[in-house]
Length: 263
Image (cartoon, rainbow, N blue to C red; front, side, top):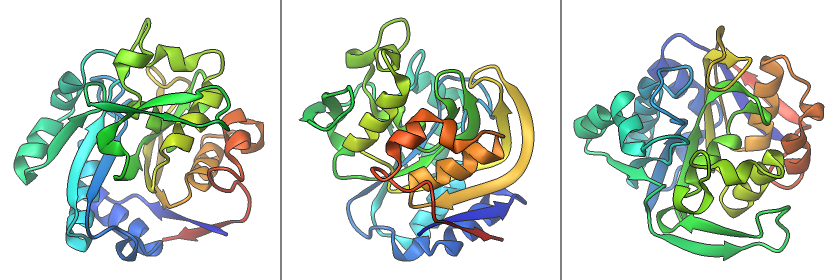
């Protein structure tokens, strides 16, 4: 059974701390190595198109309190340059405040990994820095024009380096022939170890120019399929009708047997 915390939003630090405590995250964070906090910074637009820097700050503080591992923030934006998205969304200031490293997955050294069971991405250019890192996916709860919803799993598109996957935009090659299958494949190569979803204000209709909708929640869990199942329901969708979730069920996590812990 997969546990997912669903906490009423009263502020990023208090609500994220409560959600992580409900799933006993402090006991499961690594104490060595590298923790990479992965927001959704697809471009330089303000939240809820992108992850609020205050959410990432709250996650950083929690990790720093409970782990001695190195902590960094990483993203590979979907359009433009990642450095510009970091600047536009307050992440450069965050990095300076706490001495954090900002990682641009679009420019990192890569290694090629092959997965014979992949649905369509049979080999993947993985940023080497990601390979042994503990990835915390921190997306905004959003609808998506290709995959119905974009939450914890779709957020991992950011690790795909633009030099290998760009076309009309930085990750465009991963959107054909099936974006749903690419979501599953990328997470086969590296799935998030922990997911924290900013559902305080969701973006409905479309992932770039949708309509903000107050949901008033923070979600957290170690099973990205379970987290995305609950998130998709909160957006008004039937998870059973979302292809990437059906493909990921039993492979990357569980859609059924969710234990929702409220607070």
